[in-house]
Image (cartoon, rainbow, N blue to C red; front, side):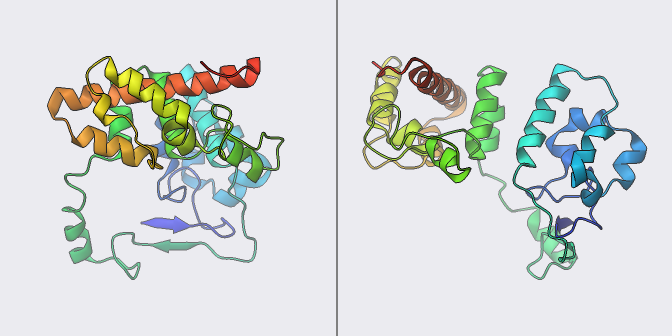
Length: 250
């Protein structure tokens, strides 16, 4: 069962599936463990988002893992305004009409059985946690690139920091930018995989990731995935350096 939040009065903040189709106890399990059992069961979305009262529900130890998930959740809730005049809607995600059906549930067991999506590619890679977390931000379009700064009305440069030729987005920075394509070519050439580097016309980072990883098998696929995660992290740090130092990358 999933929920579409309107005014938030009938949806439970911590346990219902209302945030991108998932529950917070699945998105942030360590943070969820730091919340009292009573609050998990009765805190509605309306109550939680009013004056950010959900923060007061956190009473357990503030470990590094809890703090990381706290920041992730804060970011996810950033663009979740309530609609006071709209009732919450609760529906069965596995059927077209939103109603529970044993047949729809059974058929869902066979959907996506062989898919190798970005989530598995990110979290099962051998890259350091900070690199995997960055890719998680990329997947959710949460990186502070020019296009996102513009959407939030914040000061921003009009063109890409790396090539100064085109409008900047996270996909552009990672695969479409001339500098980025050269970076991937030189990185992949170190392991004899330069043929898989992004080509002119490549516009989607995760589409390129999927095509590249599907060209390999077994351990080779795991290695390519980890190399891509590390490479994306390096590129992002180059962007940050260019921004802070105001010098063109080499």
